[in-house]
Image (cartoon, rainbow, N blue to C red; front, side):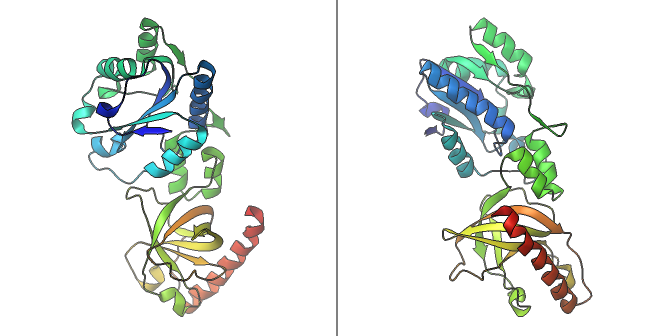
Length: 311
């Protein structure tokens, strides 16, 4: 898969099959569109292509942007390569670029650079200044340029349309197990192990503190989670706490994980992949460290029983 990071470096194509969008998280609905253009490209013997943006336009256009990223760019590109795309154009999204009209974008990027035979987008798709490039715009544009427009049916699960927004709300609610049904995998991210207070070690529950590598990574709701981690090519199960450790009257948010098979030696500064499998309970303030330890023992029993479910 070829990745191009500026419009100026993109070499014009004689033909292509293409889609446009942020594709954050690459959920089941995204897979439908991406798999279609890969299949169609191979059938027509032309490249399957994606135009996407970095950063997410939300961070440029929002007055007070907050972390909403479901998938780092590296993770997204890895997933796109696995799906089988031929080319990805990552356009740097700036305030100036945000003023580009849908008509200009369609003519100078879609048509001039990609010369698409087929464009595939979801029904809620749009691009261009003030979201002018909606489905109605694309229908007219494709008719005028003899381009096939493919619009797959929106995928639903339990009556809800699958979308990145819905997945974000589930993650923020701590509904880890349900996220899998929409995302097609467990929510997680790559993180860096950092030094902590070592308080867990004093309670016989040594933990590794971690921070996401992607600075705008969406963080699940506070609480205790059953997790699966991978570090130094070793897969481990454990329980993870997200929160401020109210029992000790702390205010700083921390993410820490206790692995059931012990800590991995020399892990500080290393990268760990964390998957949030199930939320065990809310964060809670206990009357004493002794009471907290009793609860941690119960949490661990629950998590140990869950291992068989996820093996």
